[in-house]
Length: 108
Length: 119
Image 1 (spheres, one colour):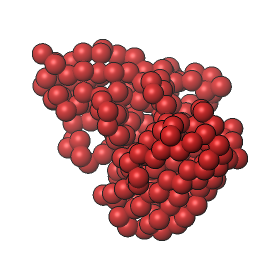
Image 2: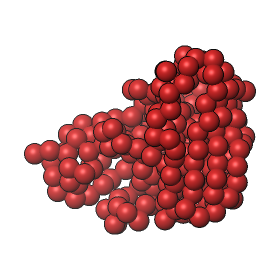
Image 3: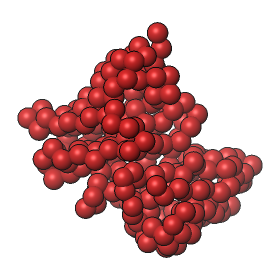
């Protein structure tokens, strides 16, 4: 099973600033990586797939990069609605598909 | 707009079987994988398994053969059965549509249903 490790666990950011979230895979997943956003009381929302392709309707301030074992989600100019928990998920080697433990982006 | 809705009991006794159904509306049911994901309270996400619309399935080995996912294309529904539950199976259970050639990532989700395992 591929283990996904996200860092940091919590990121404190001021509105308008940028946030950089990291996700590391225990072995290469090529570019088979997705990012999700989850707000309290809501289901996860797909943001990125293929490591860097934004899902339909996702604002351009969300960008994904990386391949192999190191991945980054960057949120530029954070808006109030962006404060949430973010999860990465690999879909290279299965079963099972595996998620990271999440990074909480909170208001500084 | 595609919508998914989970249904089923919110309380299951230990050692019994958890049964949930996901009803899909507002879009095509065919040619997709349909997935169950769960989230224990305050914890991250765990992929349970998926079913292709044709009926083929794949499951998380960590569930040790306790899980069955089935599909009813006539009703645009798919179902989860998890046998011999324990308190560790208490979680918010989500159904989702999976995209990609192997049901890889999840673009539409239900709102989730909380299932507690307790006597």
